[in-house]
Structures are given as structure tokens and as C-alpha cells.
Length: 392
Image 1 (cartoon, rainbow, N blue to C red):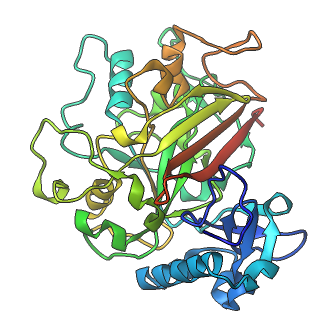
Image 2 (spheres, helix red, strand yellow; image 1 turned 135 degrees about the vertical axis):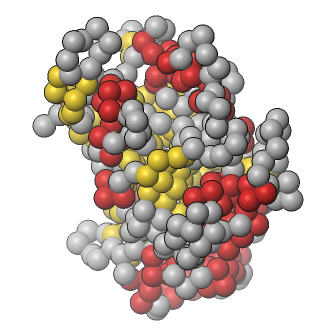
């Protein structure tokens, strides 16, 4: 129970308490916690200058004990009889939200078996959908931290080299096959100078957000052999403005899907349970086009972090690693347009009579996510939204 008058069905209840960076008018950005239709100004409520830095990084650097202590303090404020912090609540509709953390490094994985199988069927017909290594290690690529942007930032159509199979030589110009990738991101709060074991995942990851890792499929198709994605991915990655603490997701933890190969010891998660029962929703111009289920991801975030660091690579405060496109087994559970429209063979039909194979200028994509909460309700991750603007 709480003394707050929370809207019915809010995804920002007392069991959630996600962190973000906000400002009002010309004020300096500072840390806030979403609660109902309000944001608690943490800098004002606590008097702690760590919440006035305009980034979550300094607070994350204090480590898991500090994260837990503040969460306990927040819960006490909102469930106790003292409403002293009410003076520091700001209407959420009046705030501007900013990138919640300074991104140190960005890594994007490829962990949905359904997504990887769909792309394998599209691009390698007659061959096994999955590459031989896919079930033995979490495949990933390093992205560009400098182009991670907060939800609402316009996405300019990228330009680059592209070459259709019928073209004799490549041409340069705006991407003709601009796509989305509905993903879930994990934010490292406690650094490591070496391998992070699967069992130590919660000691290093601060929280979770929603990600849209935009993709220019035509640029990527021409450039990716032999080293992988570059310009086709580096132009923009969008993240939701709220970071849900990992501690808020205890009720969402589930077993990962069965594996039919024996994993190497450093990826063995048989004694862990870091599958997460998150439900994503993808909307195009206000119309829901997909509902990808995150719980079916083959590789968990704990395995991803273990693999990322097993070679001795360091992890830093503010590292972001994303799941890769989340897709389920059904046609309306696919997390990218290349799957939903089956590479242009089955255009997506919208209620206004238009069709899409890939994104057009002016299109707006919104991805949201929810998860079971400890009180039996569902908590929200908020939205990550981007509108496509013409190439410059």
C-alpha cells in the first residue's frame, strides 16, 4: 500500500521505481524516479549531490550495496505514513527526459533463435537456418556508443554504399531498407577487470531498458562480409529513458528455453535462472504490429555478460549490452520488419490502406515492454520512440 494516489493500471508502481534523468524548463538535468504520473526529484529529496550530476553513472559507481539501500529507502518513503517527499514530486507530463546514463561501450547480441532462424531461411535458403556456432556461443558485434540516443530523438535515414544482387557495382545514397530491431538492453553499473561468471550477473548489472537498434539492411548486406555490421548499424541506437532496476524483476525470472547442445562450463546456467518474462510491443504509426516474447530468448543476459568478458575484456560503468532482435515463433511475434514483411515478399498492411516492407520517411516506431511485478501487477519499462527523418 502507498499514500500516493496512483492511476489504475500504472506500470510505475512501488514495486518498479525506475531511474531516469529529467529536467524542468531550463533547470539542470538531475536524477528522478518514476512513480505513477510523477517523477520524484532525487537530488532534492535526498540532498545527495550524486543525483545532481545529470547521469546515473556516478550513483551506479557506488555499487550494489548503495543501489539496494536507496531502493529500500524509496520503498519506505512511498509505503510509510510520512509523505514528506510529496513536495519533491514533479508531474511526469511536465518534464523533459534525457539519456539516463553515459554509455561507455555498446555491444549488440544475436540471441533469439526464432529471429536468427528466420534470417537464415531468408538469406541462406536450402542451408541450415542457424550457423554452426550459434548454439555454442552468444554471437555479438561491437556497436558505436556515441550514437546511442534517448527515446524521442529523431532518426535520420542513413546514407552509404548499397548493392542489390542485380547491380553490377555499388551505388551511394540513402538506405532503401531501413528497419527496426526490438531489443532489451542491460546496463552495467559495477565494473569488472576480467571474466564475470554467470552467477555474478546481478552483482554487476544495474538495470534494464528497452532498445531499438535501427538497421539499414541494404548497407549492412553489402558491407558485413567478412567483419560484420558497420555503417548499417552505427548511425543510431535508441534507448528508453527509464532504467528498471534489476531488483524489480525478481517476479519476472524464468528458466531459459531448453538447449539441445552441451554448453561449455563458463556458459552453464543450469544453477541460475536469468530468463526474463518480458513482453514487448511494437507499434508503427500508432498501430500495434508485433508482440515479441522475451522469455524465449535462447541466450540469457547473464550468459551474454559472461561471454563478453571471458577473454579478459573489461566491463565499465555505463556499458550497454543488448539482446539482439527479440522474435517469437508466430508471425505476429517478430521483432523486425524484415521478418514481419518477409524481406518484402509479404508487405505489412496498415489500417490506413498503406503497406510497408521497410520504413518510410515520417514513420514513427514505438517499442514498449512490461513484466510481472512482485505485487501481482505488471511493471512498465516505458517506451522507446523514434521518427524517421529524410536523409541529409
